[in-house]
Image (cartoon, rainbow, N blue to C red; front, side, top):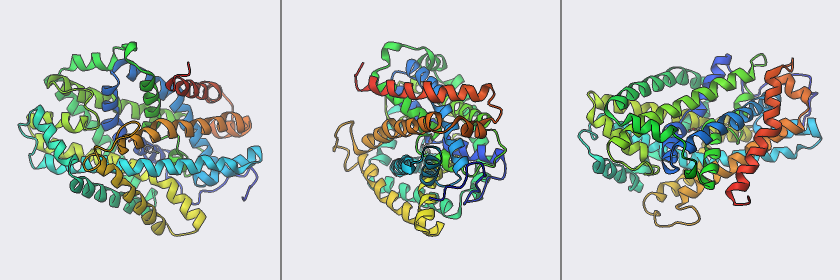
Amino acid sequence: MDADPPTERRISLHGEWSSRFAFILAVAGSAVGLGNVWKFPYIAGENGGGAFVLFYLLCVSLIGLPIMMAEILIGRRGRRNPVATMGLIGDEESGTSKWAIVGIVGIGAGILILSYYSVIAGWAFAYVWKGISGSFSGLDADAVGTLFGGLAGSALATGTWHTVFMVMTVAVVAKGVERGLEKAVRVLMPALIALLFVLLGYSMVAGDFAGAVEFMFAPRFSELTRDGALIALGHAFFTLSVGMGAVMAYGAYLPDEHSIGKTSMAIVAADTGIAMLAGLVIFPIVFANGLDPATGPGLVFQSLPLAFGQMPGGQIVAGGFFLLLTFAAWTSAISLMEPGVAWLIETLRVGRLVAAWALGLSIWLLGFLSVFSFNVLSDVTFLRGTFFDNLDYLTANIMLPLGGLAIVVFAGWIMSQNSTADEIDPGAGSSYRAWRFLARYIAPIAVILIFLNAIGLF
Ligand code: PFF
């Protein structure tokens, strides 16, 4: 391992972001995706709302935020792919490059997540055309269920859309992240937020808004189970894209002079705000139409079409909304692949094109296990449910929190104070001290306690 002296700044092997804003956009593009609009509402619905949402917000700010900062600082210091970076800095700080394992497990998590993420993103894309062509007009609660069941229940349709989405993702990764990605996020993210606000207006007028606010924000602590707490923790990692090296890989391309703390706070705030917005759009429709908040993965695909089918200009709004959701998923999917691709390029010395298509092909194939979980293999269940359910649980609720734990312990305990302060705030001011306290004590202890609690150890 080429351990250059720590004081000398390393240069990224894959280019740099053109500005701090471009980096914020890229990480925000990674963070904001299906997790906010598809997953947050459905798991909040399944876990009783209020207390779950509050616990999730605590996890995001006390655990997710310091871990995001840790990933960026490690990434920027190493300026390699997450495996090489963890090995390199591990070697520098503690004389062992074994920390590279964290990067390898992270790449594995990214591959597993993308294999099912692409399937859900494929549904969103399919709904663009359904929306535009007027398939939602006049549907009632039963009919939206049938429509969604028709898509998810068809291995051919779901598999085809999964294929289309994977090709879109690989096509961008094969070209290099900074080209294309910046531009896409800069325009599409504000458009998604604007559209969510329009829908919020609709839900306030036409939905059961008061019921939704009560469901989401009135904490009923008895409804938060041990498992629900772990799911909230897992979702804090999933939604912020931390715990697997995606943010670390992007941090490697962040120019030296930019503040890690401010950047991370902006991203966390935007990501959380969008999830809250999505909930406040979806739940009023759910309650006004007698849908079950615990419907599961189909929740967003069954609630929003009810609204689109009733509102003036609903076809355009529906098409636009699902298109923007597909784009949001796309920028996240790109970041799920980037660590693996950067690693393949640097280790096997293959070109980006080859690395991206080879990895993409494997993820695409693996994705069929999730495609089939909703149709031909829907009866094959074990542990948590279908293959999809298990994959989602394993990656989001186990792999990401453990990966994040390793990363934050590394940044808080293994790296010297000099190195971390040098990246975050060379003056070691109060923001640095707050980060270090969260990174050394609060985040690791909380993750461990939530795990122990989930397996019933106390
Ligand atoms: N944060 C993304 C979302 O909320 O949809 C999903 C994700 C992307 C998770 C990248 C993990 C990751 F590394």
